[in-house]
Length: 90
Image (cartoon, rainbow, N blue to C red; front, side, top):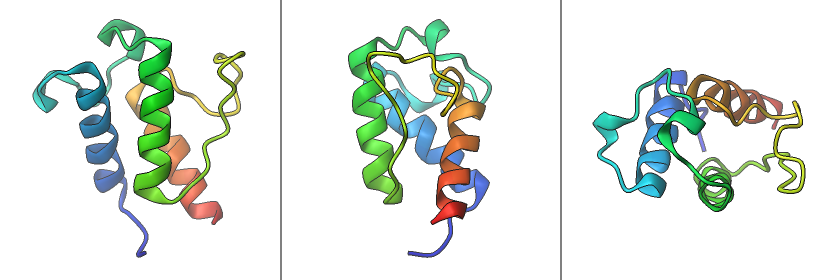
């Protein structure tokens, strides 16, 4: 797999989040906060699985402690940064 560009990662993150939220992609802003979008904990876990599959990465996320700073899953930019970092570290 070739390295994804930041724009490709952002587009994939937004598409995956929109699917979990049952929203049009256009309703998920590139600077959106997940809490503001209404993504629940199950949706976060499903989005993580989808991102891991899409980019062949393993996201460090503990459902019992979702606010640990290992991977910022609070905002779209945080997710994009985290995914980009994990891709770069492969």
